[in-house]
Image (cartoon, rainbow, N blue to C red; front, side, top):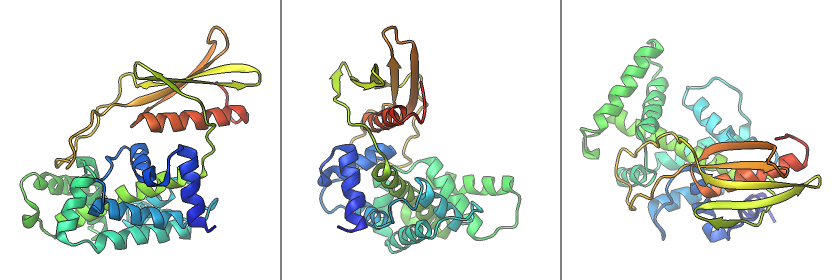
Length: 284
């Protein structure tokens, strides 16, 4: 079995999903909507990126390396990145650059691109042109490009607009690749979860002490960024989630973390936290 199968099968095991559901699960972890089913262009591009990421050597990269390589390639980060992550970023770039205008527009819709995504894309576009101007002017120029999207249909996009969208997609897809890296190299402790009133509960015994684990709606979550263009599927209710682990009869020690974009993301993080607690890598 090759690295690709290893990484994808590890991700399936760690998230407890069947292979056909892996892409949707990874979207859930990254906070992006799942692409429409079937041979939809967004799904095809996502699957292409996942297969590129799946071929990266196990144990050689950290989650975030593909995004970092994307920022380096965009001229927004000055850092050394591992060659495999640069190769993945280059593959993503080629995939996006090969998209024609119609598919590009479909991807923009399907990834639920936000103003922040576009602002990053515009900044990357301007950085590539090596504009000799202070950062503050660069930010103003990037925001000006973003503002123009509201007034222009794709057929009236200039080169800056198309380049900003492509750059934003580089980062979105790099993030998806990094989610696969994280999940495939994580070691969650599988817990038996029960759900009541939208609260997921489980428990784990560590060092003879019962630890209760809760996954629930986050308190005071940050408002989620709205897509610039309407996503093709009806918008799901955007809920932020958090996990909390308590131990001892009087819940003496407690630790929580969040927000996460989905219950699955919070559950996975909680199960990884239980592994870290059991290994003594952290404490409540």
